[in-house]
Length: 202
Image (tube, rainbow, N blue to C red; front, side):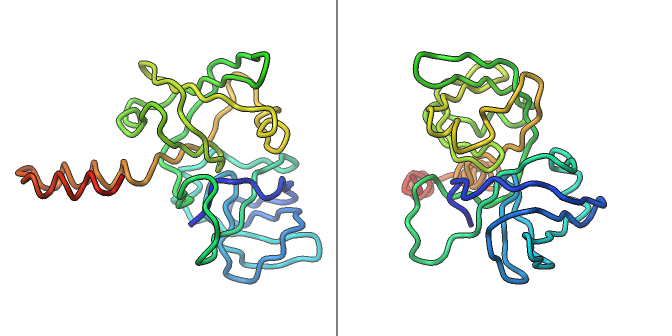
């Protein structure tokens, strides 16, 4: 489980399609979970300059491809009792989005991200979404897009300042939205007690 707060910007040193070697000042142990651009990956090797994580076949199919030399958002896993400053992020990427428009403002920048139609039911105005592992609040819902407003400190501390129109990003929807959708589809005949229980999740 993660916060959706970037702890460090790492750099990809090697990638063979399975093992991803990253330059980083983080000091994980073997087996630790690290969110790399929002994807929860396990550390299989620790090096003098960082660590190596391994990708499964499913991870390769679900994620925006990694490229040697590119930078990535890194976050180590939460520990029991840690303060949650973003929102609860599992590191399970649901969809790939595409940046469709970038609008600089007097303070901050608006990013418009186009999503697959299947993703839109999980998006809510003022709800949470993780974009490349960054916990963000949705400021507007459009037909097939969401708008997020990035403040200057987030631009400075993340890779959002480097993003361009057309760039692909990893999207993780809010896990409570996924659970509620599953419950509603699994049990068609809801009682008022069921509705109250689902509402209590929020």
